[in-house]
Image 1 (cartoon, rainbow, N blue to C red):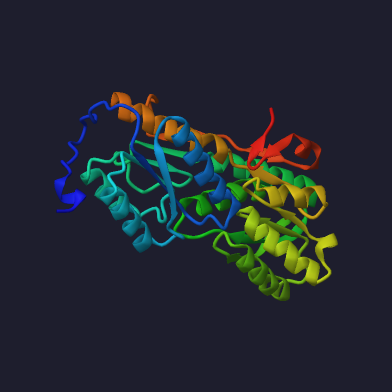
Image 2: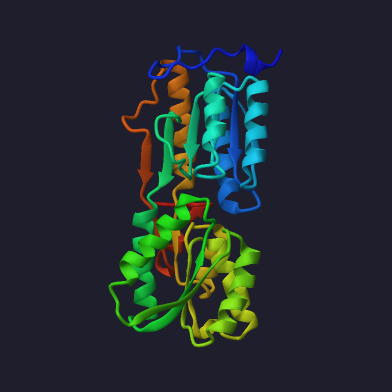
Length: 311
């Protein structure tokens, strides 16, 4: 008989019984080939082990079927809690419900799902605040009159739309700025490179590229280098990855917006631990926003480790 069959169903509105620390904490990230998600998994696992749990880190690669199978594995392995970076805002709801039916609390990190009241907590970057920071800096570097293009993240991730809308809120205030094209590059460096080539061919007169994350921005920089146009086109990023900071130091990227993933990944584990021990996460709100920080050449010396800026 499977662990799923044996597990008692969760009762809505009733806290789980308190438990001692220990057991398996299953951590499911998106794709660790991206340094952002690699850091997310590493930090969460280290915090779980520090608190006395065993930790397993696996990756959905943004696929909801894979994610569902990983939830099944966590249930079978009798995980006491699941830290999940959801693959899809709507498509991951079923996976979260399945874990809850097995009486396993779920804490979401980095991305939200389109239903409240299921996960015990949802910890994400303040993407609207971060996008405004980035866009304001980008205008300062680019100027108030230019044709530009935008690289967009995965449409299934609410963060992509939030960042793009945040950019638009700022950039629409400048009548001299015209967005002449945009392409979805799915948070990926190779796609960022290829989509930048397409955009450059269609719009050779652009002087700016604003990107939903660093990987796409770095791909765009590679394409602009190949075309001999990087010196005349300003590129802005978002994430705060080590490669992006190196590109800023090299004068290739104007800025990046640091997401505090190293902070909220550890905090997610702390809240899971609190819930297992007390039946409460220790915070008042399910959805928690963590403000982003702008990184430019002026403060790269304070970048002390992956996605961490010394105060």
